[in-house]
Picture 1: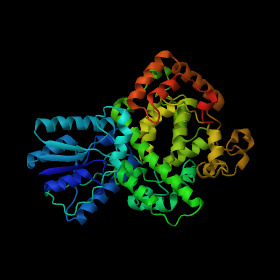
Picture 2: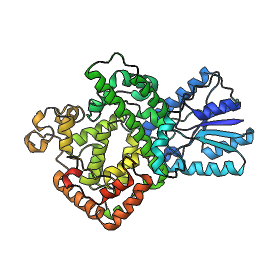
Picture 3: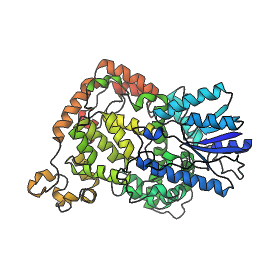
Length: 501
């Protein structure tokens, strides 16, 4: 008997382990709900709500095939051992997973057990992330080659071994508390193929221009990130459908051709970036808990749950655009990339908070939480990678650029609902109109200048530069040659060009 083990790949289309498993004979399609996973500090109530929906949806797919998904509740290794005692397990088919430390340690223990018991565990590449990559120089080529391979069709027939299934526990059973999640546009529960089609043919026309706006991006972005995080659709499927769509638009004329083509190109780049950042975690597991560049251990940022941290968490910093982004995220589970970067920048630079506690808090809020992307991006926006440009976002300027009329702010910060547009981004300048809203938590300009001075004192040390070169060789983007990169390390750009004001 062969097991097809579903993890964060809850689909049938383009599922190589399922395809090969079915081709080999009878299978036991298995999903394991691990209680210990749901005790980890980076998972939450909102993640579990989506998991319940996607597991139920996958079960429905098996029922339509005349079978069912077998759900087991327990720790993965004991569950697999129990199945091995009752069935003659020959092979386990699954995708290789690059997720959090819990999953890494779990898979290491299972690999040891399968090796010791002569069980063949076949792990398949998923979404362009390469196991045991020998050099980052080849990664982009490997990614494109993988994306162009055939999409695995849904198996026509599935013959399954009968096995009792457990009921999924409730969020209360797992002690997952309600966290304010009330999605107002629930793209995550719409079928991924429908979400993708609406983006490629309707919503995405202004994607390139509108992806940074907090209101416009809700519709203009693909909104597939939660589906991708849980694996209800593969990156390869999205990539190939996007390429197909670029050839199927005879209806486009004039400026529409340019806008759609720009959107398609920009979107496909971001599909590659998605895998690029997860590859970083695959190649450097400590990104999840340790500064990528050790020189930044000397920054001595605040790690305690201080009043500033708590006000940032609740969206009570006194900076309207920051607070609106945080409150929107708490409620809906999603904000666009630029707003995520600004929240991290404000916490790491203006409030001088260590990225580890703030990243865990945000991980629990993002419905589309993906550790490889999340921790790489948090460290990048906190200035601890040693290989990226330092970006300190000015929340006032960001608000003026992306929410000039204050519509987003007034939606999520009702205390400022009656504030004139001219004052909504800097309400402290008119204290007589401030009402119950908060005074600024810090002096934005002063805190930014202090942070940049601290960062650059370390960044420009000779020892820091030599370590940066080694880091870049291991996990850096290969958009430029190594010689170009090394030359750039010896040129410090003008300060104002390194900040996004």
